[in-house]
Length: 107
Image (cartoon, rainbow, N blue to C red; front, side, top):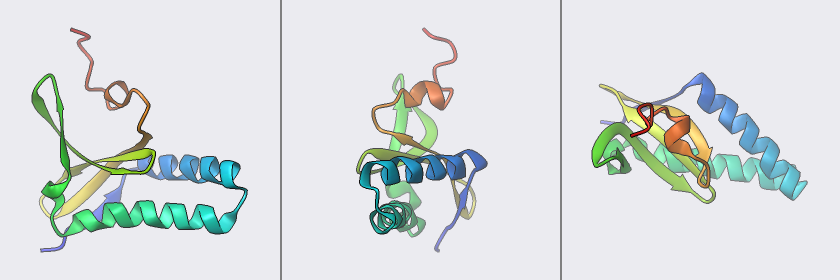
């Protein structure tokens, strides 16, 4: 079964930000368009086997998120009955635990 992929509003905003960052660095629409297309293809490859992404664990507990790495970015997603919900696409060097609100107790 092929899973449908849905992007959250924040993930769409992340894609817009990534587009701007890549364009600023490359000054090329061709390079930027290809980068975004390749990023989305990496996410799309999860549609056949969504659990083949890496599970995100925090404090040795599965968070419910899986992730796929593409170059400098990490796409975080959850698996629903028949869809993959991409929650965020973040820079790999960011504090994604905090951004995903996984460290709310700070212990």
